[in-house]
Image (cartoon, rainbow, N blue to C red; front, side):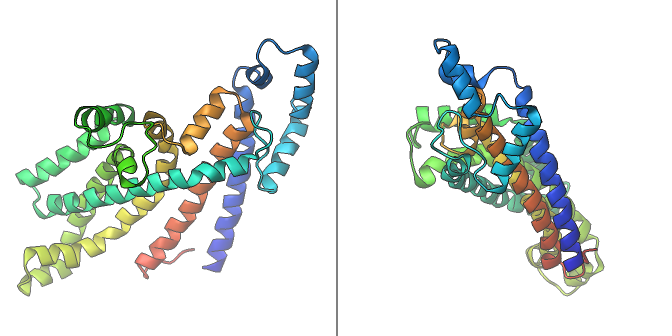
Length: 309
């Protein structure tokens, strides 16, 4: 186990170094000058030169990269171009809880939808219930967030007025429900299909036939013997998708005008605030890396027969 963790940690470190370098280079390929975005066209050449020097934009690329790596190592992630008094780390820390709450709400919603649908589809294989559950799953995959979000807003906030409109800054479940549905629908579809497939595999095991032979009701066979052993790949995919939910929140937060990592990223991107863009991408990338390691450990916890090597 410790050998595995050491190897994975080294690989994770190499991955993070690669991401840091890639993000640094890609952000600088985006057209436009951040000095123009900050000062506008009316600034004098002296003001532009002073700002460029203060932001290290006049330095050679290797020197800029060294500044960037130093900012990553000290945890500040640099300072925002638009708001030099604030470090990027503090800006991200301010909005990250809102994005994390949205991602976890979407994950909980996805499991809440997927497990019952997957169990019903597997237990009633080949019936109308199976076809209905499979159709719902396909629809969930086919509907993009950018279309589903406005549709939910139009139905439940504009027409029915059951839930707040985007930009109302509603707190609690009311403000979280529609964004969580928008973000979690596709994941619910993926988990439904995975639950069904995993359960159908487990149904072929001998101990399931033995449980039926002992006279257990079909719902007891499905929930106590089949679902429990089919959950491992479902949990794994769900945990691995948490990173995707964080990155997918970019679109959802924009549609619902929620303050969060996605909104911060988009505002910074269009303002050419490179340190903030770099910081947001890094946080999502590092989350992916950490979650991948956590998922491997989850395998061991869920199934003691698994050995990490």
